[in-house]
Image (cartoon, rainbow, N blue to C red; front, side):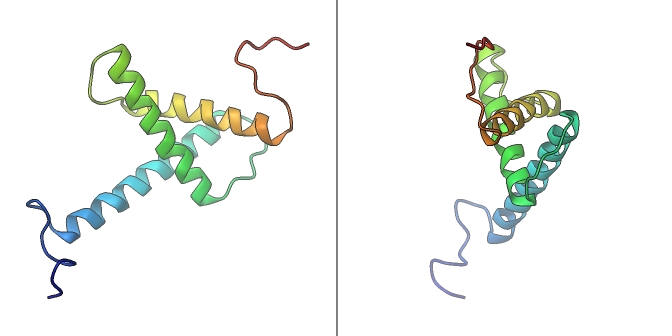
Length: 106
């Protein structure tokens, strides 16, 4: 065994870290795909972009849940809502329209 590379870290093994990364990527892909399906219209995103949107939506939903409700977990519904908001902002940005949170146009 290679010293320092494949040694257990803080009671876990390399396999559990790899499994965590795989589950994180799969859940990000699932949340991102649902968010893209909820928002109608064309959406030219690659699978890695969809995965990153889902992971960012889950992370931001976790922050929102912690700040508003004091709970450590956000749940799938809040994650999909946050990821849908991110997809909306990406679409607006790619269309060349300025993203304004007030929704007012000049």
